[in-house]
Each structure stands twice: as structure tokens, then as C-alpha cells.
Amino acid sequence: MEVLLIIGTVLASVVVGYLIGSIPTSVIIGKVFFRKDVRDYGSHNAGGTNAGRVFGRKVGLLVMILDILKSALPLWGIYFLVTKTAFGTYAPTPWTYYLAAFGELLGHCYPIFAKFKGGKAVSSFAGFVFGTNWILGLIGLALMLIVLKIKKHVSLGSIVASGFVTVFSLFSLLPATATLGFWPGMEGGVIYIVLLMVETQYLFERHHENIGRLLHHKESRIKWMH
Image (cartoon, rainbow, N blue to C red; front, top):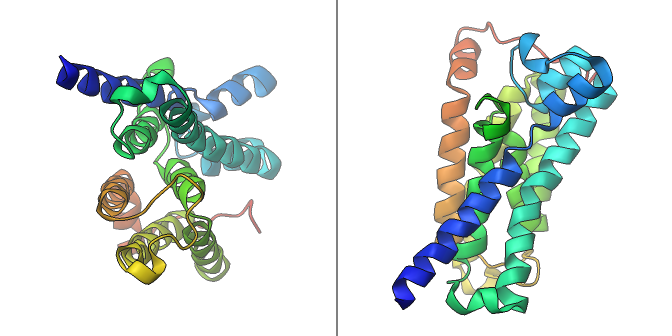
């Protein structure tokens, strides 16, 4: 019975994360304020980059910020439930709240509230990293901005940043740096690194068309961030 409760608790966390991730920020903003579905324009993607392309720079940045916060919400929400309430009695940590963040990523990419047509996991990855380790978050942001400055490709910046962040996360296996940059209650180690690897691989797969265009020098350059 106890095993079933543990499994049920973990699954419930993933479902909560998925439902929160399924809130289609750019779709809601587009329909409420512009009477347009962002997925009908530009790259037909529901992420912040396409929102900026369709609705303008300020809207694009707003969508990115909201999506990053949306990603951190289930991570920290489930964390507090696990550590501050009876919910944590059968919640293995940190699996429970880390998997809630992964559920959010799935919801962001395949939102049940928006016909399963969502973003490409960039904001979800960023929210998870910033929500767990501010040093890794700043490293990823710096790399993203450098690539954007030089190449003007959001897709390339996302791929480079997520890849390097995952590599840097390996330092959390060292005793001297195991807690460096992690927020209180969050922790590194094998579980964290494995989840980062899974999210990075997922981000790469969501960008497979972009990768093909980059290799053939056909990827469009971002203009609204200039």
C-alpha cells in the first residue's frame, strides 16, 4: 500500500506540472489582446520568439518571462507541499518536485488546453534551471545572449546554452561544488543531472527542423530583439 501511495504522489506531481505547463500564455495573450492565434502566423509556434515576431518585442519578452515563471511554479509549489505539509509523507525527494518540473515541460510543449500545439521547451528549461541553481541560470543566459549577439539565431542560442548548462551541471557531483548556486531545498547530483540531460535532449528534438536549417544556413535571424 505504501508503494502505491508513493507512486500515486509522484504521478500526481507530474500531472499538476503538466496542467500548469498547459496554460498557453502566448495563445491567451494573442486572443485576448490581439484577437489572433499566434500559431496561425510566423513559425506557427506558441513560444515567446514567435509571439515577438507576430505581436512585437514587448509581447515576446512578456511571454518568455511568464513562461519561465510558469515553469518554476510547479517546481517550487510541489517542493513546499512536500516539505511543509503531510503531502510529503509519501513523496520521495527530490524526485517529486523535479518530475513536476518535467511534467510542466511536457505541458508547455503539448498543452491539453491548446490542442497540444505548444512551445519548444526553451522557457521550461530556463525556468527549471533558474528555479534550482542561479549560477547555472546565469551561465545559460550569458551564453544565450552571446550567441544572439553574434549569430542572431534564437534556436542556436537555446541549443548552445542548454548543452553547456548540462555539461556544467556535472560539477555538482564534486563535493566542493555540490551545493554551489543551488537554492535552499534544491540539490544537484545524479538525479538533477539526469533530468537536465533528458530536458536538453528533448529541447534538441523539438528543434530538429531548426538544426537542419542551421546546417544549411537557412535559419531565419531574429529581428525583434535587435
